[in-house]
Image (spheres, rainbow, N blue to C red):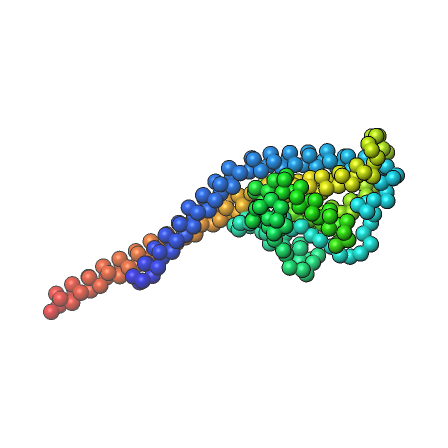
Length: 271
């Protein structure tokens, strides 16, 4: 009985320690939510602006022959996978990896090496990932695409629906998807539309990547906040259940000790 009480007491201390950790991580996530959502909205607006320029260029007949607009001839695909670099975010990472495995059997290669060679960084974090890094990556990817190293460029990221809902998704970047809407050119491009298109595509890819990363990070923070809320509630419930069990065991032990004392006292009197 004594060993059981000691084990319960240690278990309560362990869960209480985990409770403090989940509270701390939940507070950190809460402090990041506002900024992450603001950055997500800014990147969305920027991408919409760049996309509107691409729509204008796609409406120009001379641009139809561009390799960036032609449908892919082969099946060689390169995917950018945007996942979290920390755990304790519910199913955030597992949903991303599950979607990737549904579309590819290749091993995921970290992007750190690609950026390290040009910017000097040795780690790519979704929280600190910025426009300069996206631009370096986009330029490199466009060069590989023009060189024929792959036929299709996609990105797997997470769509922010609400604080409660985040959805893993795969989006096509290159070749640039054709719009279902009928477009008409309303801009004049200098020196000519194909030249502007070639210069604008790396910017378009960079805007696409940064928008996906910012939205994924906002989704990660929201998922972690909800996961920590759930973990905190579960820990509190577990502590309550363990305390009830502990008090019951302690009461049983005290009752047993009193019974033994009374029995011992009665046997002495009979003697």
